[in-house]
Amino acid sequence: MARHDAHAGLLLLLPAAAWLLLCARQGVGAQKVRVEEELEAYPNESVDLRCQFIDGGGRTKLTQVSWIWEPIDGQRDNIAVYHPEYGQSFPNLSFKDRVVFLHNNLENPSIRISNLRMSDAGRYTCEYATYPSGNEQGTSTLVMLAKPKNSAKVVTVQAGTKAVVVAQCEAADAKPAAAIKWLASVGGNHSTSTVNGPDGTVTVRSEYRLVPTPADDGRELTCMVDQRTQDRTWVHMLRLSVEYPPSVSIEGYDQNWFVGRQDATLVCAANTNPPPTAITWTTASGPLPDTVEVDANKLTVRNVDDAVNTTFICEVRNKHGVAKHQITILVTEKERPVSSGPATGAIIGGILGALAVLGAIVGLIFFIRRRQDDAEGPPKHKPPPPVKSGGSTELFNKPSEPPAATEMAPLSPGDVYYEPTGSEPVRNNGGETSGALNGGGPPLPDDDYDLSSADHHEPAPAANIARGESFVSPAIVSSPQYPLSS
Ligand SMILES: *[C@@H]1O[C@H](CO)[C@@H](O)[C@H](O)[C@H]1NC(C)=O
Ligand SMILES: *[C@@H]1O[C@H](CO)[C@@H](O)[C@H](O)[C@H]1NC(C)=O
Image (cartoon, rainbow, N blue to C red; front, side, top):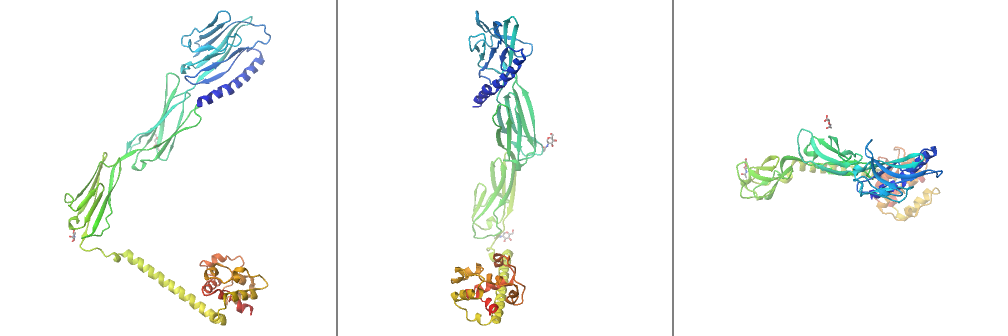
């Protein structure tokens, strides 16, 4: 596919550009042999070297045409000759079976070279012997390209204190040379080296170095290769492999092993890479008691007795070393009382304290409400039915606002809590009344006062009253308007 793309480039872009260039030159007068300036090709492909003799007046006599290959300056090898009478000749052995004339024609001696090799790169000159002007020629440059062979790999290392190579990336046998970049989630740096191959290709290698720590194990490192023949950057993600000796801890002891307890367990937690080759449980006094079962890193005591009133040791080994950890078990005669822990006491104390504060708040609210109801008189003792209450709201609020259907309907306490019906009329009633309504308290908030936030712990007295009332009945929600309007 990339080869096709490259072909398309050759067939479309280069000839067009080269032709334009050469036509411009011919306008100046000298060039009568038209060729393409530069061509690119890959090994094992074939390339067409086009050539054409342009004779404006038609008075030039063409005798013979040759293709001359110049791999390096100064070395000229005839690879293809055409003579109208004597025919075709391919004098160079290394091209002999790989070159053909595309047309048997002196005016158009284009050739095709197949099975290209990197070493075919160089200049190819289409040279005419003419009369009377002598030799006429045009030269094409053939650029041989090579895609890099890309690879990347991690180098498994041991954690340490010196920077070492942890990853390698290579773009081999490329022409032109590739460029290697790294994208790293770790510290460190890289060095890149270049080796020239005998056929003109280049191998680029890059090594990534860092001081490896256990934490670097598994971290990502990405190698990226850019090269002219690649449609896009080659990207290869690696995961670092850092090995280290084990570190061990014993987990699972809850400080509550008592005689008769079932299935008490300890877990030997080891951080190791590579995985442990051995996990060994022992006690400080020697081998494990018979009552203990061991399954890899897990130790289970089916029935706790004073045989496990001892120190357990877990030892973990991998190829880089060995580490152990120990824990001393204290077996008690009786189970530790669960509720006597200081943490539990604190929690219970906290709950009791919170309940006390809550009770005080509730008591205060009822006290305030009671005093207000006493001041307001009758409405408190004869709560009107909900519908009537809506009617009275309508009556006293008019003509400012027709009652909405929701205000008319019997309201459940929950509805009232969130509906602004209780306080909305108050806000519409103007400044001079709000003070009276408030019973001499702080003035009510302005119209842009946010009711929803008032419902949530806002200290404004009006909101508190509305909320308290709403729990009793919808009728009382509108009760503040009674004294206001009468
Ligand atoms: C990168 O390499 C240089 C030279 O070896 C070294 O001095 C430097 O500390 C390295 N930087 C890091 C981040 O490893
Ligand atoms: C376990 O050993 C401790 C002393 O190390 C001792 O006080 C305790 O009584 C022992 N528990 C039992 C159940 O024997």
